[in-house]
Image (cartoon, rainbow, N blue to C red; front, side):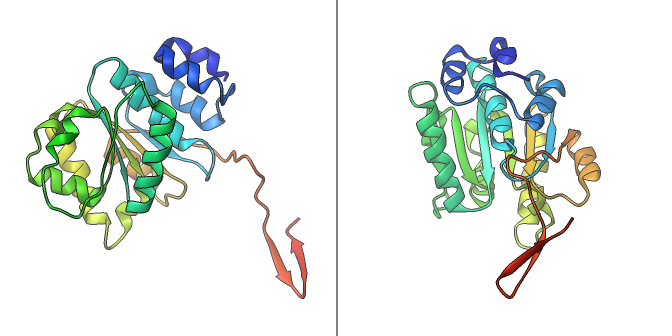
Length: 221
């Protein structure tokens, strides 16, 4: 699928910037579009690293913001990753949307974020915002959960599960986009999220398995 085919679904400024970087959607991105990405459908994306998962979340976010449906929140597990995504999104959408970052250790409501369109935060920070009854949370239209397989993590999993559960109760119309390269029970998780499951094996660089021994690598045939 060519980027040009979804031009009508994107804000003109966003399409103009994306078209300078890409002309063709990856298989996972094309599947997401066909599954209802622009129709506010919940999606669970389970595809290899570098297959274009992040852009799927971005497209859902920027569309919601441009249509004045509300804010977009991008949840990541680590502060370093949050800072990296913030820099990337800010560079890409500078002058179109207001990108915010919330990863502080202080347990507070961060009311200043009401002025931002696209907010990147950790699950622990979003948990703090919910407990403080932060008013702008009711304006969230899209929730993107990166590394969603961490629901199964003993330390981070419970917090993430509670976050998603609470936000679905507070925001019954919120669109959830889950992203992961590895999910053992993808169908079960998709059912819990009431999401369409997108799976694909395409990756930009072919993955080969082999054994290194005595200075040589013997690859599987």
